[in-house]
Image (cartoon, rainbow, N blue to C red; front, side):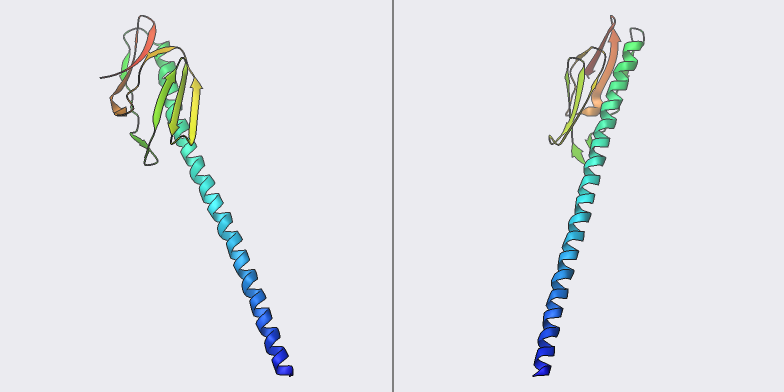
Length: 136
């Protein structure tokens, strides 16, 4: 009778140990996946922020230079391996990717449109005291 009780107690202790171990492993897996996801989102936001900052600094620089300034903007086709889009409205720039992130900067007034399909074919210039962005 004592052996049966000891065996039952051992089985119960093993089940409790196994369940506790599985709970701890599940919590750790969730914790690390959350950290990985947050890190990925932070890298994405940082990359989009860099593109927006580059555009803002190019517009700032063009507005401070003399008429006749023209330069091809060197932008990556993709950020973190995915397409992104740039929109302008008034003196604001939006850099978006899958509607997950959007960064905008207030910049001097400028005119023009941006070619999102061929980002390497965009130029910035200044004529008649106006900054403009155009595609060739």
